Each structure stands twice: as C-alpha cells, then as structure tokens.
Length: 293
Image 1 (spheres, rainbow, N blue to C red):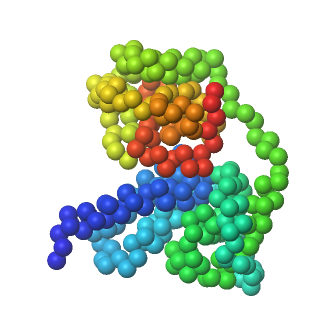
Image 2: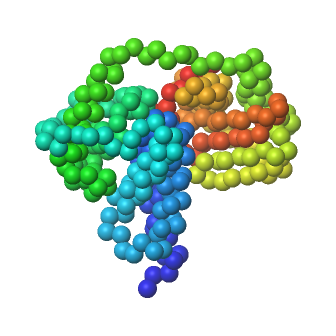
C-alpha cells in the first residue's frame, strides 16, 4: 500500500502542472483573474482534503476540473448573480470543432463571459479556450452531450454579439490619497530604497506570495523585500488590474514587454496592510485587463 506521502507527491506535481489551466477556467467562470485565483485556491484546498478518501482516481485531470467547476458554481451562488444553469434546447446542432470560434472565444474579455449563463460559459471555456472534447466536458460537468452542444451554440453566438457592442464601462479612477500612496510605494521600490518601503508597513501587515508562501507582521514581511533586492528582473509601474489599483511588474531587462505579473496592495489608515504578489503565479495575466496609470 502506498503511503500518504507517496500518494501526495505525484498529486502535488499534478496540481502544479494543472494550476495555470485551472485558473484559465476559473477566471472565465468568475469574470476576474483575481477572483478566479480565489476560486482556484478554494478548489485546490478541497482537492487536497478529499484526496485521502477518494480512492483510485481514473482521470485525475477531470477530477480536478470537476472540483474547480463546483467551486466556481459555489462562488457564483454566493454572489447570487446568475442561476447555476440555463435551459437549453438539447436538439440544437453545433459544429464542436471550429478554429474561428476557438479564436473568438480565446480573445473574448473576461467581462464578456460573465454575460453568458453558466452552462454556456463553462461549455465554451472548456471547448474553445481549453480544448476539451464533448465527451470530456460531459464527464466533468455531468451534462449530456446534446445539452453541451446547445450551450456551445448559444454561448458562441452571444459572444459574437457582445464583441460588436461598444465597451461603455467607466474608466477606473484613483483618489488623490490612493494615487499618492501607490506612487510612493512604486517610486521607493524602483529606487531600491527598501528601508523606506518597510517604513510603509502596518504592524499587522499580511503578505501572500501566491503559490509560495504567506507571511504576517512587519518582521516577517520585511524579509520579502530582501529577495527583491537580490533580483534584477523587475521594474514596477503604477496601474490598474480589472479596475483595481495595482502594481504592474515589467521585466527590468525588457521594459517594452507587457507586464509579466502584478502585485495588489491594501492600505489602512495610510499604512500598507496587505500585499498579494503573483510573481510565482504568472498565469494570472492571461486575460487580465491591465492599464498603466
């Protein structure tokens, strides 16, 4: 009999390999790369907890997607924005393999996916964005193949309609105080004045280095900046991610390249209370709406 460690080691490797693909799914189900990461972390926690009692898993990848899908549905129910599934015509005929539609879905903004009913959204993402077959989608979502075909037909059609609509969402804005704090952090960081950066930390500051570590308190979080001081592959820019103030991180050796990842900051009473750094989870930028301040 395999020991728990022998079981968990290959499973841990699978989680690492699957994490970007699972995030692509969760981000499009929630309409946000940030909330998609929250759902992904919830799903991975559930998977690790369920593993000891799961028995032999014939299709680990499908098993993980089923957990991620259910976690996304739980999230959507909590947010109470849509019903779990829409009614579809099971006799609708659709061509499941269409490269043009694949490209349209892959290029669609995350906010567009949120305007699809959940059944359409999950089916389009799994086939046109992630490349799964009808049979694989049916197994993961526990929906019949005719229903998936119907959801694909309607979801693809709706995405085409949405692509032609103007984007009338208001541009993100920062208050003067928010802008001052964000720019001060970026300027001090780029100047490598990490003592000045540490002076901005609240006593109870919390750090999440996504997919790596969590630290809390000024002393622990202060060590995080030491690692940045030893690296040369970054240059920070103030900006927005999905309308939220953020630090966009460019390659210091190639400033013309798009941001490789971003960092979210949370302030309380003018002090830095939270840092969420995606340096080790760069899949986060796939589909993210990034805007330089």
